[in-house]
Length: 102
Image (spheres, rainbow, N blue to C red):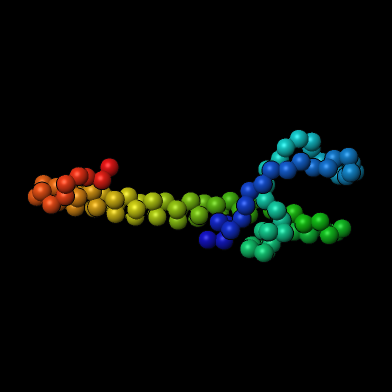
């Protein structure tokens, strides 16, 4: 999944250096546009002066699909664990396993 290759970051704008842009002060969270561009270039826009920005609303559907994919993996692993627990219990009942794995 493309979205899994991205890293969330925290940052603070250099408000004094770029006073004309009127950035909000304080801590912010996001992703690095150049990193996103390597993975999902369609959601990175370039301004007139060359600065890059991410269209975050375009990330939402990708995040939804990543969560769905993750949930499928979790369900598959849950079923596998239940099967293994059941097998261990049957072996314990037959006296073939001395101690259950907890």
